[in-house]
Length: 319
Ligand SMILES: [Fe+2]
Ligand SMILES: [Fe+2]
Image 1 (cartoon, rainbow, N blue to C red):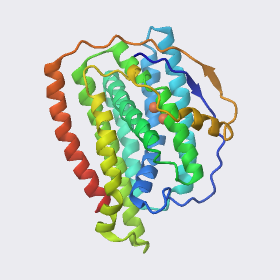
Image 2 (image 1 turned 60 degrees about the vertical axis):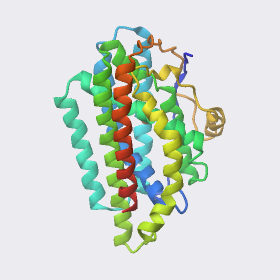
Image 3 (image 1 turned 90 degrees about the vertical axis):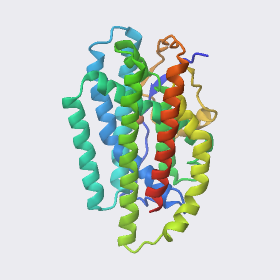
Image 4 (image 1 turned 135 degrees about the vertical axis):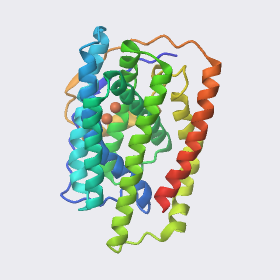
């Protein structure tokens, strides 16, 4: 099944108060702070993706892909702007967080200056493959249903648009370079790099709470809160992420999750008119030839790494 997806750049009209409680999900400090940490990373990673795609654009010869890149950049630009405003409202004065953000900013500067364009495009694809899987998991699970309403609108708008442009970085990588092992290796690094930031930033926020006398009940309480989420993630998120590591992976085969239409209808009330409305049918790349030997080897590595990562994540957020 191939999917063709409209990519629409929407200008969301959300206003954030001067100060927002970072506890986006009531009674869930670890998950709330992980969402805030992800948001903190976006004004760094998304401009980097735009810079990468703008450089790649000079080499792309497919007109439909050129148009898709322009829309991808338009959406990511809006995301970075809105999340920067949200972050300003939700970010507490916390030197540890400032240091982590500075480190992330320097990382993306260094990647752009010292890595090849192929590496940066593969990073972009790894990031997009992961956010696509995460976006569809969060929608399927309705994780944000009871979140603080402004944060819910912000994240759900972002999730829908991430799904809309899920094929663009992949298509650029395949169009310019191809190469499964390279995509897997750099993509895995990209996912580790970003996830590491999210875990460290969420942990810094939890530590900041402790220093300010806001107690969330210690390790055992944290584990009890996180257990249902990790169980759902193991059943529904991990298989989606593992699917992106297959040599046969293509985001063109991923259908939009149910519920996107109702989110868009709700968000229409919070949105101005779309700034761009073009529907480029991003040309599907032919599926890769099956290579069961590589598939099995990759799956074994990924399973091992995923189990290790899940253990580290659980430990980091409940420490
Ligand atoms: Fe985005
Ligand atoms: Fe994206």
